[in-house]
Image (cartoon, rainbow, N blue to C red; front, top):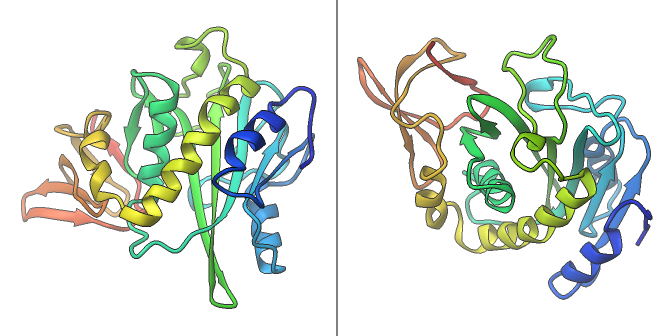
Length: 253
């Protein structure tokens, strides 16, 4: 375990150790991307459960190759590498988002498939990557949360910040709130899938009942998510289930 005096590394490790005895926590002052680093380790044969916090990322990645900029204290960026073998991977990013939202604040909403929203602005994002090496499945879950307000230049969605909801919250305190529940929920997902979480996700679904358009040219009304995590879209041609998490969905304004 690598500790940092500014981060609750030891506390998180002590909480998680009973669940994952080979768990480790690392805090790095700077790295290209915490997800990229843990994927490199996975491909090199390292399968120990690892929580890697990056105080600053020089090449942070979001979904579909988008850049996630990270400055010390302004955001919380971390990745979690975990051996995971669920029967069905569908809905994993939704389960991650739900865990984070429930750990943070009742007013944090969820936008399919992997964004946290507050008042129709993006509060954070999730990047899930998986690798299979030597018959073992490993998932790397990357999380980026805005702690303080950030510049909206170049962003498709205006940003929100957790300081609007929790003014005293720091990045380190945020990590302490979300780390253990996230690991617990990932282990529960491995055993039970997304279906038991469907109603809890619906309670925070910011798209449900709203007209939306998708990046592949569809328009309709979002009907919520199904038990497998697919977005249900009422279109002129009927109800379409969108499974592909590479498709972006936005409310019609």
